[in-house]
Length: 177
Image 1 (spheres, one colour):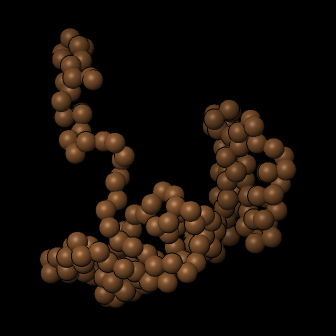
Image 2: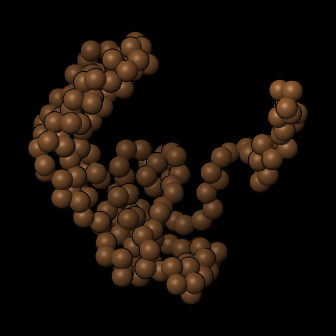
């Protein structure tokens, strides 16, 4: 909620409702959001199809109708690439700074040399934590963001299996494992 608000846009929290959710859990999330002045909508499209998302759609439409959006990026595009990374790391992830690995520093230099330094940055992070330490849960503070390799799809090869698949005109499929 805090991260989205930084961009000057309204927030609607969706509780993706499942059969084993307790009323206490739902009440806790709802109370927390309401204490921040953030609308909450339950959503259970998995059980009720499109009808299960009507409450969410209505909450989003009400938020849009309020006209309170005033989007602003977190940094000016003419900031340096490192300044942009530091801004995202500190404002979104709670880091105290950014540490570029030698490979990442070379890539950053290449980006600037190729005239792409004025573009916005896109940051991928570990799935475990906002930091690079999977034991720091929630929204940790007091860490330095470490750049490096991110495996986007664990266990997949560099060559997608789909490249070896064919669907013949008779419907026969070739190349499935």
